[in-house]
Image (cartoon, rainbow, N blue to C red; front, side, top):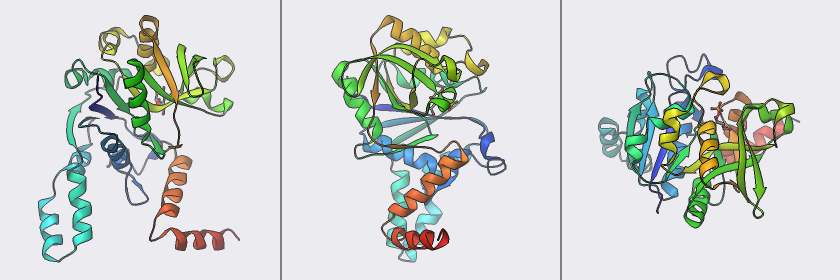
Length: 287
Ligand code: G1P
């Protein structure tokens, strides 16, 4: 079955970025020249996703405004003949069909995804977390969609992380099928470094079968006393084949300050207009 829908949870409070996130969503913080959530939406659209559900919490209105049509601004840009800027702005409001729903209480990622049940219906769907931005030749979620279509089973996007970092992630234990694909045997959300079954971490991209919903409905709070998607997927892996796929690409953890800076600097260096000047500036700075 084709994967046409994506769910982007964006209900978190963004406490790691206070005070910047006191009055604005962390998903709207700028990475080089656009808000971080736009990278995620663009990745979904490039991968052929048609409908995107963004799960919001309170104080997230500016995300809706960002992807909405901006008549006054478009009018002004048109009358001033600013063609390129106009195209850029119009492009944002034409990025697929974006839907919104509110997660009324922050009960965890598993609960946020459960809120997408009616939107998803009985189809496989992508889940894309905004704290992970991936720079790759083929959009990261497209790589997972292709594997879903090949195996007709839930696929979890993973990469190796430093052993000392495993307590920040969902960790996968799997049986190697080939270079990039593992059959999931166990999943643990944020294990202690000494107890982790591996250093293969879930990095914010999934393609999941709708069979997850009746499981999430009964998933009890786990790590951090939150309803964890990882725990739901662990139960799914008991019932059906679930695979993890080591996706190609560089992943930035924009949910912490260092990762956010790395992404900002590297995306600026990649920019056609500013890249080389910025590189010179950096070289001089650190001489
Ligand atoms: C979430 C997931 C975790 C995953 C991580 C990737 O955790 O629960 O399994 O490894 O995203 O970024 P969070 O970072 O939201 O605590």
